[in-house]
Image (cartoon, rainbow, N blue to C red; front, side):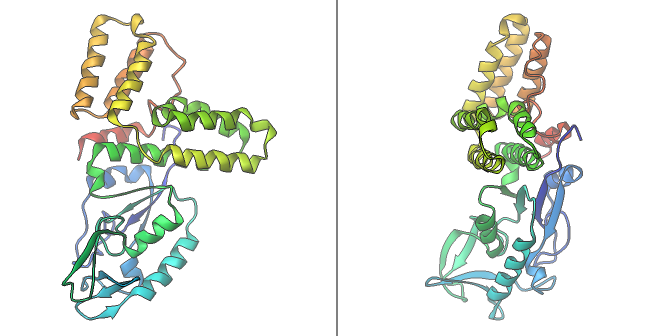
Length: 315
Protein backbone atom coordinates (compact mmCIF):
# COMPACT_ATOMS: atom_id res chain seq x y z
CA UNK A 1 0.00 0.00 0.00
CA UNK A 2 2.66 2.49 -1.21
CA UNK A 3 4.46 2.34 2.12
CA UNK A 4 1.53 3.67 4.13
CA UNK A 5 0.61 2.43 7.58
CA UNK A 6 -3.03 1.33 7.79
CA UNK A 7 -4.95 3.71 10.10
CA UNK A 8 -7.10 2.26 12.88
CA UNK A 9 -10.47 4.00 12.72
CA UNK A 10 -13.38 3.51 15.13
CA UNK A 11 -16.60 3.81 13.12
CA UNK A 12 -20.29 3.76 13.95
CA UNK A 13 -21.41 0.29 12.91
CA UNK A 14 -24.57 1.61 11.23
CA UNK A 15 -22.41 3.37 8.59
CA UNK A 16 -21.87 0.78 5.83
CA UNK A 17 -21.26 -2.12 8.24
CA UNK A 18 -24.46 -3.45 9.80
CA UNK A 19 -28.20 -2.88 10.01
CA UNK A 20 -28.32 -1.61 13.57
CA UNK A 21 -30.02 1.80 13.54
CA UNK A 22 -33.12 2.33 15.68
CA UNK A 23 -35.25 2.19 12.50
CA UNK A 24 -33.64 -1.00 11.19
CA UNK A 25 -31.71 0.76 8.43
CA UNK A 26 -28.07 1.13 7.43
CA UNK A 27 -26.34 4.37 6.42
CA UNK A 28 -24.81 4.36 2.95
CA UNK A 29 -21.59 6.35 2.55
CA UNK A 30 -19.61 6.02 -0.72
CA UNK A 31 -16.47 7.39 0.92
CA UNK A 32 -16.45 4.65 3.57
CA UNK A 33 -17.11 1.91 1.03
CA UNK A 34 -14.23 3.20 -1.11
CA UNK A 35 -11.79 3.39 1.79
CA UNK A 36 -12.44 -0.03 3.36
CA UNK A 37 -9.40 -1.68 1.70
CA UNK A 38 -7.12 1.05 3.06
CA UNK A 39 -8.22 1.32 6.68
CA UNK A 40 -8.70 -0.97 9.63
CA UNK A 41 -12.24 -0.04 10.60
CA UNK A 42 -13.39 -0.94 14.12
CA UNK A 43 -17.22 -0.89 14.02
CA UNK A 44 -19.17 -0.18 17.19
CA UNK A 45 -22.83 0.39 18.04
CA UNK A 46 -23.06 1.60 21.65
CA UNK A 47 -26.85 1.24 21.69
CA UNK A 48 -26.78 -2.41 20.61
CA UNK A 49 -23.88 -3.00 22.99
CA UNK A 50 -26.06 -2.07 25.98
CA UNK A 51 -28.80 -4.48 24.94
CA UNK A 52 -31.09 -2.37 22.78
CA UNK A 53 -32.57 -4.35 19.90
CA UNK A 54 -33.07 -3.59 16.20
CA UNK A 55 -35.40 -1.97 15.42
CA UNK A 56 -36.02 -0.11 18.68
CA UNK A 57 -37.74 2.92 20.05
CA UNK A 58 -35.40 5.93 19.72
CA UNK A 59 -33.51 7.44 22.65
CA UNK A 60 -32.94 11.10 23.40
CA UNK A 61 -30.68 13.26 25.51
CA UNK A 62 -32.48 14.98 28.36
CA UNK A 63 -30.73 17.69 30.38
CA UNK A 64 -32.32 18.68 33.68
CA UNK A 65 -30.20 21.10 35.66
CA UNK A 66 -26.64 19.76 35.50
CA UNK A 67 -27.73 16.19 34.92
CA UNK A 68 -27.50 14.70 31.43
CA UNK A 69 -29.50 11.53 30.85
CA UNK A 70 -30.15 9.09 28.02
CA UNK A 71 -33.87 8.36 27.93
CA UNK A 72 -36.11 6.24 25.73
CA UNK A 73 -38.89 8.79 25.80
CA UNK A 74 -41.65 6.46 24.57
CA UNK A 75 -41.12 4.06 27.49
CA UNK A 76 -39.42 6.25 30.08
CA UNK A 77 -36.49 3.82 30.36
CA UNK A 78 -33.23 5.41 31.49
CA UNK A 79 -30.12 4.03 29.76
CA UNK A 80 -27.67 6.53 31.24
CA UNK A 81 -25.81 4.22 33.61
CA UNK A 82 -25.68 1.34 31.14
CA UNK A 83 -24.12 3.65 28.56
CA UNK A 84 -21.61 5.02 31.07
CA UNK A 85 -20.54 1.49 32.01
CA UNK A 86 -20.16 0.45 28.38
CA UNK A 87 -18.17 3.58 27.51
CA UNK A 88 -15.80 3.09 30.44
CA UNK A 89 -15.10 -0.51 29.48
CA UNK A 90 -14.83 0.21 25.76
CA UNK A 91 -12.46 3.15 25.92
CA UNK A 92 -10.22 1.46 28.48
CA UNK A 93 -9.74 -1.37 25.98
CA UNK A 94 -8.88 0.80 22.95
CA UNK A 95 -5.28 1.02 21.76
CA UNK A 96 -3.44 2.55 18.80
CA UNK A 97 -6.42 4.48 17.45
CA UNK A 98 -5.87 7.09 14.72
CA UNK A 99 -9.35 8.54 14.30
CA UNK A 100 -13.14 8.26 14.50
CA UNK A 101 -15.98 8.27 11.95
CA UNK A 102 -19.25 8.58 13.83
CA UNK A 103 -22.97 8.87 13.05
CA UNK A 104 -24.01 12.50 13.03
CA UNK A 105 -26.79 13.72 15.36
CA UNK A 106 -26.88 10.38 17.20
CA UNK A 107 -27.64 10.60 20.96
CA UNK A 108 -24.90 8.02 21.43
CA UNK A 109 -22.27 8.72 18.74
CA UNK A 110 -22.86 12.31 17.63
CA UNK A 111 -20.32 15.07 18.36
CA UNK A 112 -21.39 18.69 18.45
CA UNK A 113 -24.63 18.23 16.51
CA UNK A 114 -27.03 16.33 18.80
CA UNK A 115 -30.40 17.59 20.05
CA UNK A 116 -30.97 17.81 23.81
CA UNK A 117 -34.31 18.46 25.51
CA UNK A 118 -35.37 19.89 28.85
CA UNK A 119 -37.61 16.92 29.76
CA UNK A 120 -38.74 13.53 28.51
CA UNK A 121 -41.84 15.02 26.87
CA UNK A 122 -39.48 16.87 24.49
CA UNK A 123 -41.53 20.04 24.74
CA UNK A 124 -38.47 22.27 24.99
CA UNK A 125 -35.39 21.91 22.80
CA UNK A 126 -32.36 23.17 24.73
CA UNK A 127 -29.65 22.81 22.09
CA UNK A 128 -28.76 21.16 18.79
CA UNK A 129 -25.00 21.19 19.49
CA UNK A 130 -24.69 18.60 22.27
CA UNK A 131 -22.41 15.56 22.17
CA UNK A 132 -23.85 12.08 22.36
CA UNK A 133 -22.80 9.92 25.32
CA UNK A 134 -20.24 7.92 23.31
CA UNK A 135 -19.19 11.10 21.53
CA UNK A 136 -18.46 12.71 24.91
CA UNK A 137 -15.91 10.01 25.66
CA UNK A 138 -14.28 10.31 22.24
CA UNK A 139 -13.61 13.96 23.06
CA UNK A 140 -12.48 13.13 26.61
CA UNK A 141 -10.15 10.24 25.79
CA UNK A 142 -8.90 11.31 22.35
CA UNK A 143 -9.21 15.12 22.07
CA UNK A 144 -6.44 15.40 19.46
CA UNK A 145 -7.37 12.62 17.06
CA UNK A 146 -9.20 13.06 13.77
CA UNK A 147 -12.97 12.76 13.97
CA UNK A 148 -15.68 13.29 11.37
CA UNK A 149 -19.20 12.06 10.60
CA UNK A 150 -20.88 10.83 7.44
CA UNK A 151 -22.23 14.31 6.66
CA UNK A 152 -18.99 16.25 7.14
CA UNK A 153 -17.26 13.84 4.75
CA UNK A 154 -19.21 15.39 1.87
CA UNK A 155 -17.06 18.53 2.30
CA UNK A 156 -13.94 18.00 0.19
CA UNK A 157 -11.77 20.18 2.45
CA UNK A 158 -12.70 18.27 5.61
CA UNK A 159 -12.38 14.94 3.82
CA UNK A 160 -8.91 15.89 2.61
CA UNK A 161 -7.85 17.00 6.09
CA UNK A 162 -9.19 13.79 7.64
CA UNK A 163 -7.23 11.58 5.25
CA UNK A 164 -4.00 13.53 5.63
CA UNK A 165 -4.26 13.52 9.41
CA UNK A 166 -5.08 9.83 9.93
CA UNK A 167 -2.39 8.54 7.58
CA UNK A 168 0.24 10.86 9.05
CA UNK A 169 -0.67 9.92 12.63
CA UNK A 170 -0.70 6.21 11.72
CA UNK A 171 2.84 6.50 10.40
CA UNK A 172 3.95 8.41 13.49
CA UNK A 173 2.45 5.66 15.66
CA UNK A 174 4.99 3.20 14.23
CA UNK A 175 8.08 5.29 15.07
CA UNK A 176 10.44 3.27 17.25
CA UNK A 177 13.79 5.08 17.01
CA UNK A 178 15.35 8.53 16.72
CA UNK A 179 16.25 7.70 13.12
CA UNK A 180 12.59 6.92 12.38
CA UNK A 181 11.57 10.25 13.91
CA UNK A 182 14.19 12.21 11.95
CA UNK A 183 13.15 10.51 8.69
CA UNK A 184 9.47 11.13 9.48
CA UNK A 185 10.15 14.82 10.02
CA UNK A 186 12.18 15.15 6.82
CA UNK A 187 9.56 13.31 4.79
CA UNK A 188 6.82 15.65 6.05
CA UNK A 189 8.81 18.88 5.73
CA UNK A 190 6.57 20.49 3.09
CA UNK A 191 3.31 19.13 4.52
CA UNK A 192 4.05 20.53 7.97
CA UNK A 193 5.12 23.87 6.52
CA UNK A 194 1.85 24.07 4.59
CA UNK A 195 -0.21 23.24 7.69
CA UNK A 196 1.39 25.38 10.36
CA UNK A 197 4.82 27.01 9.83
CA UNK A 198 5.08 28.09 13.48
CA UNK A 199 4.51 24.59 14.86
CA UNK A 200 6.87 23.19 12.24
CA UNK A 201 9.65 25.49 13.50
CA UNK A 202 9.12 24.22 17.04
CA UNK A 203 9.30 20.64 15.74
CA UNK A 204 12.47 21.52 13.80
CA UNK A 205 14.02 22.64 17.07
CA UNK A 206 12.99 19.41 18.83
CA UNK A 207 14.68 17.39 16.08
CA UNK A 208 17.83 19.55 16.15
CA UNK A 209 18.35 18.80 19.85
CA UNK A 210 17.37 15.16 19.64
CA UNK A 211 20.70 13.68 20.79
CA UNK A 212 20.81 15.64 24.04
CA UNK A 213 17.32 14.78 25.29
CA UNK A 214 15.59 11.80 26.87
CA UNK A 215 14.13 9.61 24.07
CA UNK A 216 10.70 9.31 25.70
CA UNK A 217 10.51 13.05 26.34
CA UNK A 218 11.50 13.84 22.76
CA UNK A 219 8.79 11.65 21.22
CA UNK A 220 6.11 12.96 23.60
CA UNK A 221 7.07 16.59 23.01
CA UNK A 222 7.10 16.03 19.26
CA UNK A 223 3.73 14.25 19.44
CA UNK A 224 2.14 17.15 21.31
CA UNK A 225 3.23 19.62 18.65
CA UNK A 226 2.20 17.26 15.86
CA UNK A 227 -1.30 17.25 17.36
CA UNK A 228 -1.27 21.05 17.56
CA UNK A 229 -0.13 21.29 13.95
CA UNK A 230 -3.13 19.25 12.80
CA UNK A 231 -5.80 21.07 14.84
CA UNK A 232 -6.94 22.99 11.76
CA UNK A 233 -6.30 22.42 8.06
CA UNK A 234 -4.76 25.25 6.04
CA UNK A 235 -7.30 27.58 4.48
CA UNK A 236 -7.63 27.17 0.69
CA UNK A 237 -5.88 30.51 0.08
CA UNK A 238 -2.99 29.44 2.32
CA UNK A 239 -2.63 26.24 0.31
CA UNK A 240 -2.65 28.29 -2.89
CA UNK A 241 0.07 30.64 -1.64
CA UNK A 242 2.17 27.69 -0.51
CA UNK A 243 1.88 25.85 -3.84
CA UNK A 244 2.73 29.02 -5.76
CA UNK A 245 5.77 29.47 -3.50
CA UNK A 246 6.98 25.98 -4.45
CA UNK A 247 6.10 26.55 -8.11
CA UNK A 248 8.14 29.77 -8.26
CA UNK A 249 11.28 27.88 -7.25
CA UNK A 250 11.45 26.15 -10.63
CA UNK A 251 8.97 28.00 -12.90
CA UNK A 252 11.85 29.31 -15.03
CA UNK A 253 12.61 25.72 -16.04
CA UNK A 254 9.23 24.89 -17.61
CA UNK A 255 7.32 26.16 -20.63
CA UNK A 256 4.87 29.05 -20.69
CA UNK A 257 2.11 26.59 -21.55
CA UNK A 258 2.89 24.56 -18.42
CA UNK A 259 2.94 27.72 -16.31
CA UNK A 260 -0.47 28.68 -17.67
CA UNK A 261 -1.87 25.21 -16.97
CA UNK A 262 -0.71 25.40 -13.35
CA UNK A 263 -2.21 28.86 -12.77
CA UNK A 264 -5.50 27.82 -14.40
CA UNK A 265 -5.71 24.84 -12.04
CA UNK A 266 -4.95 27.07 -9.07
CA UNK A 267 -7.88 29.27 -10.08
CA UNK A 268 -10.17 26.26 -10.45
CA UNK A 269 -9.19 25.07 -6.97
CA UNK A 270 -9.90 28.54 -5.60
CA UNK A 271 -13.38 28.33 -7.14
CA UNK A 272 -13.98 24.88 -5.60
CA UNK A 273 -14.12 23.15 -8.99
CA UNK A 274 -11.22 20.77 -8.40
CA UNK A 275 -9.55 19.37 -5.30
CA UNK A 276 -6.16 19.89 -3.74
CA UNK A 277 -5.01 16.43 -4.82
CA UNK A 278 -5.43 17.42 -8.48
CA UNK A 279 -3.11 20.38 -8.00
CA UNK A 280 -0.63 18.32 -6.01
CA UNK A 281 -0.37 15.79 -8.83
CA UNK A 282 0.17 18.53 -11.41
CA UNK A 283 2.71 20.36 -9.28
CA UNK A 284 4.71 17.17 -8.67
CA UNK A 285 4.64 16.38 -12.39
CA UNK A 286 5.91 19.85 -13.29
CA UNK A 287 8.67 19.63 -10.67
CA UNK A 288 9.80 16.32 -12.17
CA UNK A 289 9.72 17.77 -15.69
CA UNK A 290 11.90 20.63 -14.46
CA UNK A 291 14.46 18.06 -13.29
CA UNK A 292 14.06 18.82 -9.59
CA UNK A 293 14.51 15.75 -7.36
CA UNK A 294 14.78 17.41 -3.93
CA UNK A 295 11.04 17.06 -3.28
CA UNK A 296 10.67 13.55 -4.70
CA UNK A 297 9.89 11.85 -1.37
CA UNK A 298 7.86 14.62 0.24
CA UNK A 299 4.55 13.46 1.73
CA UNK A 300 2.90 16.72 0.66
CA UNK A 301 2.46 15.25 -2.82
CA UNK A 302 1.29 11.81 -1.61
CA UNK A 303 -0.06 12.18 1.94
CA UNK A 304 -2.34 9.14 1.58
CA UNK A 305 -2.75 6.26 -0.92
CA UNK A 306 -3.20 7.40 -4.49
CA UNK A 307 -6.36 5.35 -4.98
CA UNK A 308 -8.06 7.37 -2.25
CA UNK A 309 -7.55 10.55 -4.24
CA UNK A 310 -10.29 9.17 -6.47
CA UNK A 311 -12.73 9.67 -3.57
CA UNK A 312 -12.55 13.37 -4.41
CA UNK A 313 -14.92 12.63 -7.28
CA UNK A 314 -17.39 10.12 -5.89
CA UNK A 315 -19.26 12.26 -3.36
